[in-house]
Image 1: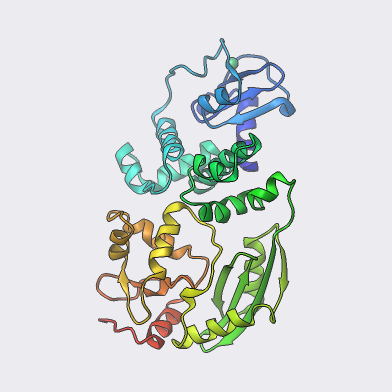
Image 2: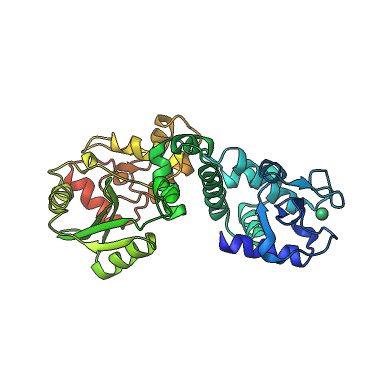
Length: 351
Ligand SMILES: [Zn+2]
């Protein structure tokens, strides 16, 4: 969010015509909003608020500037138009955006479109999506909407999804946000297993992170960087039961999919992860089967990336997703670990 607004502010100061259509800025002291490039006097930074679209600015009570007419049409260069198209698509529905398909529709390679997006907007497409949601949730919360309304109005698929995602973006859960905020407490433990160290962490609502690897110190650092605002403390006793379940899961003797989880993800990711939790031990599914199960048969690549972003190994058994031909494909925690887990579960692989 900070990078996003820095880039925007730069564009306002430079009267950068390239950024027209990407955002509008409102001046609190005048009640007027402008598009970047407006010839009006430059406002002071402290009086400026940024909005993704004109209608967001209008909803917040600002009027369109007569000089730059930010609510009207204007001529812009085609690659900027492509970037704007991505922005608008994300604003409408970001659950299943296939950037590659969208790029080729607009006549660009995915790489080119992503680069141009970063250049113009100042953050990646993924960060933009998160900023957009967080802003909507925050606006709704500050307006005093009930938390559940805020959840649905801001486009989160479920309150669980909001707590995951919203909680990370806001740095706390919504109730606490209105209370002025308090740190989330995350406890963790680690166990040694035949496939390496397993680090598991939990909020009061459920397990929020399970990582595998050869090096415990590295894993706990990763945990801290995933939850930078949380208070993270070791709690081997409190998490003994979780540890026992995970130790058994690695050997194929217990079921980690029954552990309560507290996850961060988009509505689509949540759907994929819920689907994975229903794959029985000893069985596998292909990426396209999972895509069909979640009701988006064409979203095979999106399923792949949801698997790769699974924050809780074992509890969401993404290792049970393999290629159509039965070969293993990738695994965030290493292909050897994936093979060992499937082997322990007695899964029959065709290769
Ligand atoms: Zn203006």
